[in-house]
Image: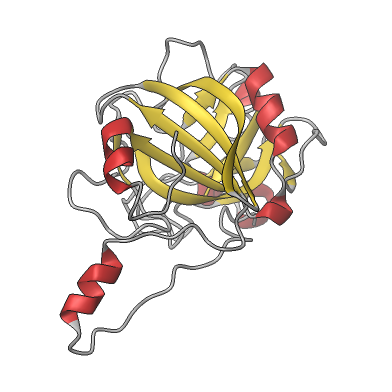
Length: 253
């Protein structure tokens, strides 16, 4: 079994011991992990917008430095909603299974994946076969995990709509190159599953909840990302990004 979260850290928890004011202060803030030196930031115009721009930043001695100009991306067909990642829980609409929304927040990036036996990237790489599925059935014990049906059995993947070889199962190239996004790392049932960066179907076509881009831009992102830099993905509407930028210690766009 190949788990989406196999190399990703669990979120830290805080006990509540009568210091509610302090905990409230902590809970409103997010911190990019000190070991993370690469950021991909997706910004769109509103919670309902289905497209946006992707920026890349590298942490240097003087702080965050922009590394490439904005890349156009497609987002969820119904916009964004708060996901589960490294950020504290937020008030507002929450990402749910099948809602067509891309998750908003701060997330670790995992391995790259694709159809070829190898690709040019600084990330780890997982080649997909016709046996690989990402399980999007909330009641499944394998929910939000990418598995090999040859290992877990065909009954375990019945009903899943996420065959990872989309060229074989659905006749398209969208998963020919992609990156696992660690949304819902504890695999909470119904909180949203199988979130990736992948190739878009076309510039004007939104996704089921992922971040999609052209193959040329995906190649550039894959070549730039480096697993040793512990890369992070951030997705927010622009107004929300500006509201949270200081508290979350985010770079100026």
